[in-house]
View 1 (cartoon, one colour):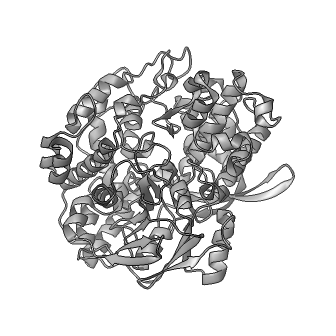
View 2 (cartoon, rainbow, N blue to C red):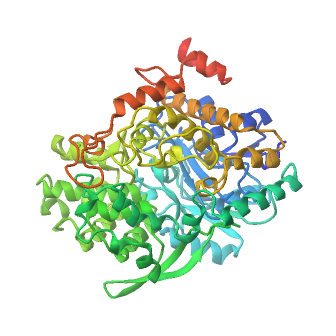
View 3 (cartoon, rainbow, N blue to C red):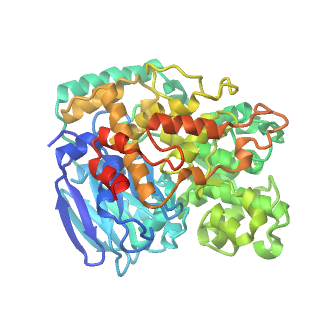
Length: 621
């Protein structure tokens, strides 16, 4: 068995309550490096196409990677996977905190849930044993209450990942929460967990993860923690402010959506100043870090909303932008309040912010009225309306019930005039990085197997020392050709980062040799940088093959015209920019070895990557 793995996959049949443990082949782990790479490969083989993501027959699960819980700095990540209830594509979501480490230390690399429980359950993992337990008393609780119950019941070493009321009610923009605000939020997989009546998974921080070469691992940790402390890559930014430090900067660069993507950031009423990090840090309660992380990029805040004190997870950039510039709101207190509502309910803040902006836009256009909103006036910049509507989405109350399944479905129900106001790709709400600022984002949003995801090619960044040169993020937008080709390298590297259990912030705060060095030392199998790129390409092709088999063609799910600058903005940092997305996508398809009309991996590409059964499925039926 390779180092870095518990060497055990847990299969849980919720319909019968039976469980079994499988030992994965080393070849599967070598070729896909754990995480959603292995998950996609397994689901392609074991789940037939065409299943409803919320049906008992669909598989939903949790993953870790070989670096999760090892001395690799920022090796803390875990995630969830399955067919997305939001998009119908391959779905995965990545989380941080301590839970993934606890899951690995409790004896399991991956969990696969099948069937559906008769009543709410939680999965209890400890010392290599697994038990389904009654969660009826937890059903209806918000995620904070579940966390408090777990700590009170099982002690400080217990960690939990759970859904809130949004997941229980199968909101298609629901995620999975740990540590009262660290979220695996995208793809709507909280709804899949809720459909199976799984409230939570509990695991314990006990023991250590075995590694193949402990001395090499410790030497690598010393080297790369040294790079983080020396300011390599983005390490100074992440250590100093974390992502909220980007909020004001992205407004200034024109990278943040403004008034539902319709206008330039220069029209923020008070500019970027009110959303600078130094204004947020005034409310800081604690600076926090994930398990043994030397970066410590996040924290908690304590604030007052309408006369009541509240404690909350510090909002991240995406939350601040999707509820901030996107709604013309510019105070951290409101943004922390909506963030807290979403975290307690188990909602994706990106999708929820997009849904609120969509509703504001529809109200302004006269497509919905106070009769639809329960008397609520939805006006840009209205803090109270934003908070109230977020609460309604969390509860599936009134118009919140319509918005809780995402903007695509809401627009379909409101009518054709609402469709251009729904900022999504394939059903997934677009996050807070504007392709008019960095054109490569359009390729990432449209072409990844999980559409509308900025982190799937690390926002077009690669780690320090990567040999290929390219324009920096947002630079020289007139040179759009070439960017589609370069997305391949960024996405392949990023797939291995995500699958391995490493945090993107660690990857972008060290040199590019981090990944092959740690994978080699931890697993005992030698990886070069080229090997890492090949593994990432293999993961990309399996995820895409999953979608092809579902009948999904990404070329038929274009981004909204607003996001592409059609027509271009008349003013601001991105004035006059139109994204040449079709040309960049054609570059990307050629580079990936996928067909130009349907993005199907060619037989040659699949066989080169050793995916012979998939080649037979797609090309020799």
